[in-house]
Amino acid sequence: MFVTEAFAQTEGAPDGHGTPLTSAPTPATSEAIGVPEGAHEAGGTFPPLNPEFFASQILWLAISFGVFYYVLSKTIIPRIASVLENRRERIAADLEAAERMRADADEAQAAYEQELASARANSQKIAGEARDSARSSADTERKRIEGELDAKLETAQARIAEIKARALADVDTIATDAAEAILTELTGASVSHDEVANAVRAVRA
Image (cartoon, rainbow, N blue to C red; front, side):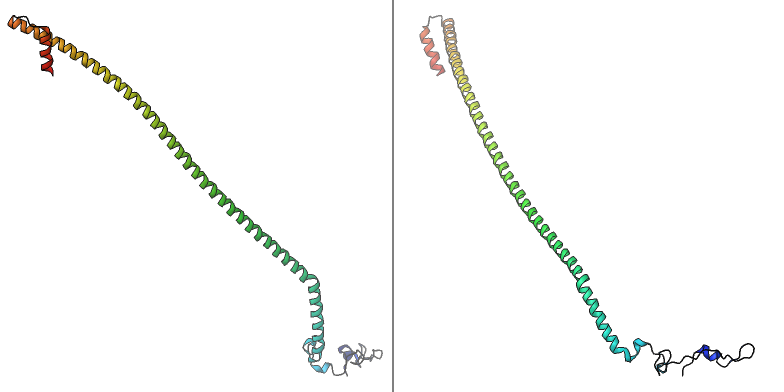
């Protein structure tokens, strides 16, 4: 039988005057405190490590896991799934926006290149037209100047021919007069003016 340490020390022991303690309470037994017979003989094994409690522990573990899974499936997992879905939708929207922006950038670049090519073509066309216009204007001005120069040249040539003819006429007259004077002076004879003029012309020819 199990006897507590306090009762073991006081049972049958005299008090300070040598009188037995007759009024001590009845010792508590293991049956009285509800401990089954032989429980203390198990060597004080920790209950979770006692094989007798494995079945109940597994049962409560399954129940706890089921309750925990139910709580997770009804509260935390839906929230996590909602957050993941929102993030997935946001990422998809961002990717779509980025793709749309890239397409817009490609279209803008293509339009810019087309406008640049058109501007280059227009500039070349304008430059060609300006060059042709300048060439045409230059040709017209050249022809006008050449015409004026030709007219002035013809006028000058006419004047030169007139001056030359006048000079030749004066030369013939001078030569005729000089020849007539020389003949008269040398021969002392009178020579016909027409004969001297004919002789001068024949010599000049």
